[in-house]
Image 1 (cartoon, rainbow, N blue to C red):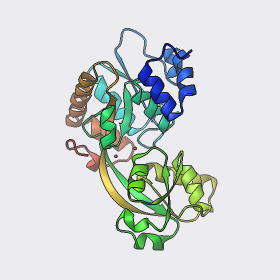
Image 2 (cartoon, rainbow, N blue to C red):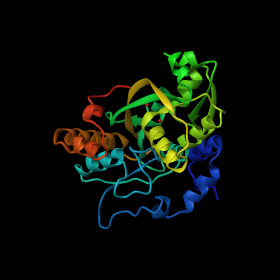
Image 3 (cartoon, helix red, strand yellow):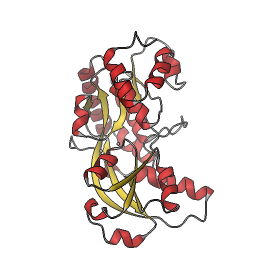
Image 4 (cartoon, rainbow, N blue to C red):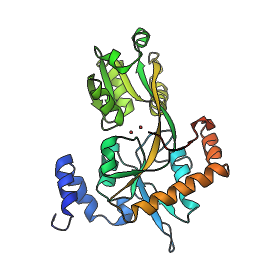
Length: 281
């Protein structure tokens, strides 16, 4: 059953422990593999970028408001007569599919040096704040850098760049698959704090408080701000040209006002506006 899969994908699958997932995807039709997102009718050239639920930038199961990153990317590709398909997966699965070349890339990701082997990074899509969240405000008063949190237990989303950052700072780390799980761990006192990107944690806090009005107040402190990018896998056909077309499209929608209009729809200020490549999930 695995004989028809490329050797480099098989090695990656065994290494990451997702061979079963890969075998299922290998036998699905293209439409099925796209989480029921159907390719547009007619002879249109499509690009498939795997997304993870990361509200309000990327929102699963909301076709009217799929997130500002998704809308920015769709608009940018549309200027180049390319139709974007954005199936949603858990982060690690999305990353694996892109790393293996089974999709054209990731909707967005952070820059890490080790990712350069498999990915090309677009011009920045925007800026994101990385923050420390806790129920104990006195903790935040003692922290100016991550190294100050070495005597604490810190929760991070598994596979995000924040996990690499926390481990590099020699923090005591506990991982979970999503932000809401981390918040629940913190509220049950299994974590001292959560280190993650500010928008999805604030979204998870809002959703949690709707179900648990008694939820205690959670404070946050921004640790760093950095750009993030769309990430084209080097293992797709014409990866370099695809990156070029995306960057041209991003420049066009910044200049014609579509970029700011999309951000405004989600209540995001144009201060997030990309201003050229620099050095985040």
